[in-house]
Image (cartoon, rainbow, N blue to C red; front, side, top):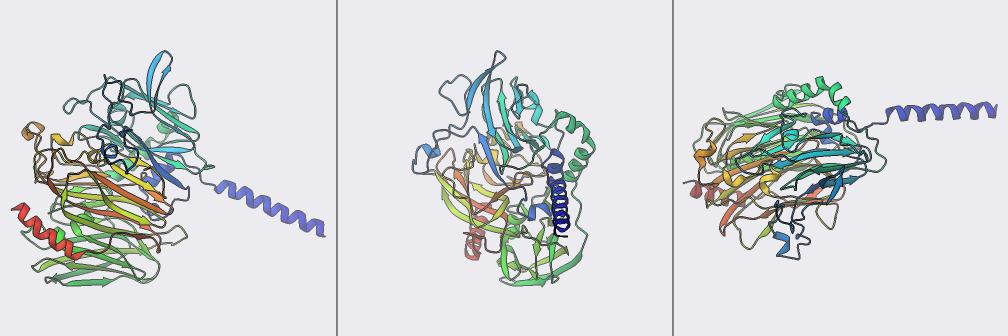
Length: 549
């Protein structure tokens, strides 16, 4: 009898193991495409744990913040005829041809964002061939013109890949099980390759052209979803239509229980003062903790004034309606408030769609915070902290608004992102402009938009009033500009901490205004160094009125 029982229990154990193996999730091109448009997924810490890393042409002279000279060197590119420029990994000779190695990651991973600029501000062409070798193959899995492969005119279709302002940007996922090496056949100029580094043992199905062709229907479906995100109508609607006097705050209580805000929209009454997008503040509390405090222009990515654009997570419409599609879960209670820090009454119309949500051990709270400062001197060079986070979470985006008082270009500063206490940033960029998906920013402040990044506010020129490049003439990037970037496959998980700094680097000495809205998901105990700051908001409103006039 004991023997029969032992055999029975052993059989159950083997069946259980077999079922577990069947349920084991494998990261594939298909699963990553599905994840790209899965709004619930971003609200949970990744089950297949990874850290976001980047290879770029950042200046190799930048080694430590203690070196106040080398840390801010702007030599983050390679000149074709300058042997001393060595901002790449190495060179190799393959089949008799010299190739420059830009990335050589050992381990399981997935490329989730690429950025390569034009070699000339007005000439989007190159003869350099980019080659992507996967899992130790001696022949590249992918190859093509350095720009054409990654700008939406080649293998990867728009909007996954596209021509941004004077650069080629691609978000198409390229997973690999063992390693990934990327080379070019001519000395590289600027470059960025952002990739996921998965934990050892993560099961990955390496990208193949055959799989790519088989998923043509899914690729088309996901691309259409990114370009035309559906309006959130599921769940119960909660509305707040009120007139807010100066200094007044009004709130709505959301449905109790385990729920999530699936969609949020806010429209203000008629107004002439463009700084109202700074003076009206959105506040949210979930399960008794305040997780959102941000001026609405920074929260919705509009910046100063209403600047229409459409992205995957946020939309600002021509009629002034601002909406977000971030999933904001809670376990018991939720509350949304609107605060008027301005001098005049304002009409508000707020709507929130609240639906059911399954909370598990990986679920996190949505957070949004704000920082603003004026004046910010461009000399000496410095790092301006967006946010520092402590605890577990996932960083998902930001919106930067600046005031530039001079014609000369302001955006050479690199992003520097430290994760989990590392000694050197996981991500060290090549310029503020490149972080937000364009290049040669000193040429113009032209409008552009994409599902994951945009420049909606550009010297009053918006999508309905575009300037040609010739009309900009003298490379004037003066006045207000807003740059925004949100993340899907390139989200940044952190286990204990994350610090995001942006270098202040202008071509001239001046005083600028900097303000940023930042977005992340975190556990209840995760903290940030950003706290509500109504006095600074009021100070900047007064400053902005003077600057605008």
